[in-house]
Amino acid sequence: VQLQASGGGLVQAGGSLRLSCAASGSMLGSSIMGWYRQAPGKQREFIGSVTSGGIIDYGDSVKGRSTISRNNAKNTLYLEMNSLKPEDTAVYYCNIKRRVTPTYNFWGPGTQVTVSS
Image (tube, rainbow, N blue to C red; front, side, top):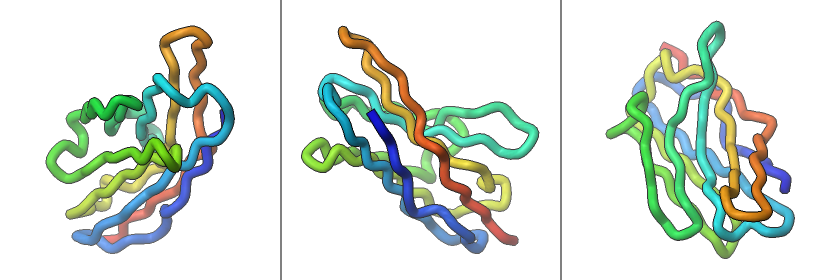
């Protein structure tokens, strides 16, 4: 399984962004796709995830300012965030995991989001 994220870049505070993560490979069904981020000097934190069945879970860090969605036909995960703050500056990572056989856990290369004040 391979993941490719897009949509990062420089955004002004108060603005919004939309990230996409396309998965390719086999056995993508029964998987959980999620977004994480890691700011300089900080641990990677969970933003949210969507199962292939459409169950969504959000982390606390951007809850209320983010929307995660998934298009199973396109094997693509999306993240929309609004009211961006400089502290949202981080590398955003896409993840896909599968907890039924065959199990796997893959990370995308990450995409940089920089929010300017």
